[in-house]
Image 1 (cartoon, rainbow, N blue to C red):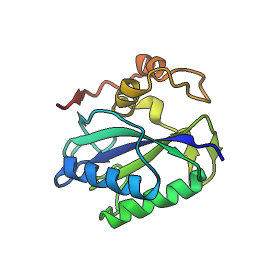
Image 2 (tube, rainbow, N blue to C red; image 1 turned 30 degrees about the vertical axis):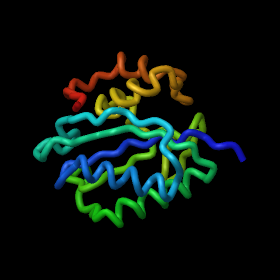
Image 3 (tube, rainbow, N blue to C red; image 1 turned 135 degrees about the horizontal axis):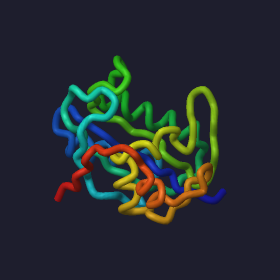
Image 4 (tube, helix red, strand yellow; image 1 turned 180 degrees about the vertical axis):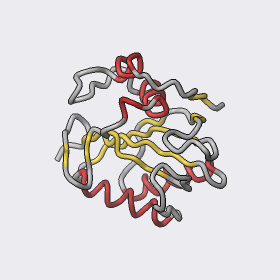
Length: 162
């Protein structure tokens, strides 16, 4: 079976967020596969529920031969293992791992929508995507990540960290 690129967004705004992103990457590589590409780490004000610390975000790409549901189960287990508690939508998070894309596959169930339903609305997702995959085409909108970013109405600052 051929691998498809599993494209994930990692985020954290609790504790040592850089270390938490690194731990999540280590666990993803151990459980899903070697990361092929990773964006820089970006700092962003919280989106949705804004009265909380800034987030650090990073996009990673992992070639994957499993199913989207299997990937979701692995990601949820990693979040749980790292101490994520889902108590409030858009609340503070020790770690958040979102499935953005699984190649050009379209998946829609009650538990998972791919491509991620809101990625085109969020600069904190699009900026790191454009850094590493500017020409990757959204399989529903038939637009590149660069085109989606150029059309994005979100005005939150997304600052690349060195």
